[in-house]
Image (tube, rainbow, N blue to C red):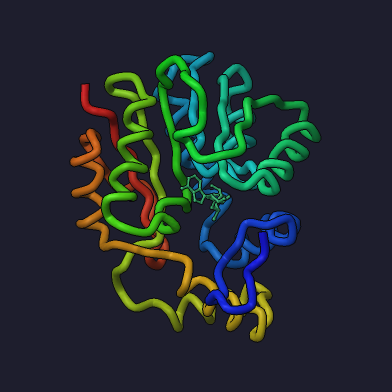
Length: 229
Ligand SMILES: C[S@@+](CC[C@H](N)C(=O)[O-])C[C@H]1O[C@@H](n2cnc3c(N)ncnc32)[C@H](O)[C@@H]1O
């Protein structure tokens, strides 16, 4: 779906975005590959070899690939409202001989599942507008996990003003000035960040405990936590 003429320009996870996502994201998020490897390694060390892992907002498949490389027997389910993004994930998995269950749609539309041992939502919740909606997003994930199940969450937070430094980083990583300027306009209309303290309050309200930071780059925060027993 493309933006219509009158609507403010937004980030849309369309086929056009899906085609360029993998290169775009690496010039945008500092430490993107290592952050994903850390998330997969953290999960792999904490769950049985054939554990079931839910990846919310699986996008172009980076979590799915990192998890399967770290633990080929892990049973991984990827969920994303964008079928175009999941199409890229499917291709990347197939190229490396991996399989995952993929579901195009919000998590609420995934049929009944056995409880998962672990879940992730990486670079997703800042796209969810509204505090009630963020809480529902987190509660749905908590509801799919086993008691004490592991949850890895990364999002853009409202914190230090690093915008100019982040712009410089992205230019230095090869993004064009005009493309970055246009993307920043879209981003401002598309993301709804909260402070790290507010996010931690939401985690607790949604039924998670023991939230600890595992990643931080500019205002991107990553936490590991557990579903309450
Ligand atoms: C920035 S991408 C992140 C993709 C992947 N997790 C990564 O780290 O590369 C955000 C993804 O979240 C998806 N998304 C947006 N809102 C969502 C929601 N409410 N539930 C699940 N996924 C959502 C988008 O379709 C998109 O694929």
